[in-house]
Image (tube, helix red, strand yellow):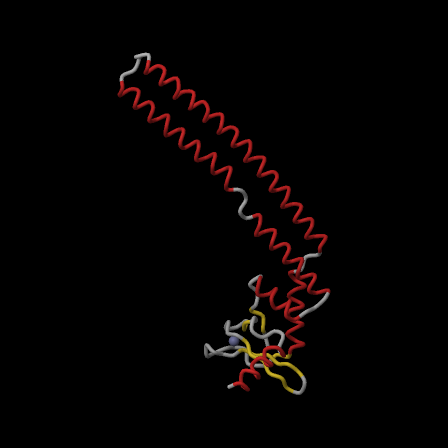
Length: 201
Ligand SMILES: [Zn+2]
C-alpha cells in the first residue's frame, strides 16, 4: 500500500495538466502516461462511450491551451482601458442613484410634513377620529414605500461590476501566462474561468 501511494504521488507530479482538465467530448476526467519520454493524455471514458480515441501528446495539449489563451487574452493596456471604462460606468451610476435618492428624500419630507399637519388639524378638532385614522394610514404607507425605495437605491450598488472587473483581470492574466508559460498556472487559469474542457485528440 505504501508503495502504491508513492507511485500515485509521482504520477501526479509528473503530469502538469492532470487532475484539472476534462475531456471536451464527454466531460470525463483525463488520465496520463509516459511513453518513450513523452507525456500522453487521454479521456478516462468512465461514462462509457467517448469520441476521443487517441492519446494526446503533452506538446500538442500545450499548443491547444496556448492557442486558447491567445484567443481570450487581453493585453495590460487593453485591460486598463476596459477597467477605466467600468470605473466611469460606476461613477455615473452612483451619481444617478444619488440624484434619484435626493428626489425621494424630498418626497419623504413632504409626506412627513403632511402627517404633522394632519395631526394638528385633528387635535384642533376639525377631523373625526375615523377621518384622521384613514388619512394617517394612507400617508404612513406612502412613507414606508418611499423609505424602501431610498434604501434600495442606497444599498443595491452595481453588483455586476465586480465580477466584470475580475473577468477582465483574468483575461489579462491569460496574456501573462502566454509570456511566461507555466503548465500548472495555465491549468488553474482554465479551471477558474470554467474552460477546463479542452482535450481534443
Ligand atoms: Zn471523453
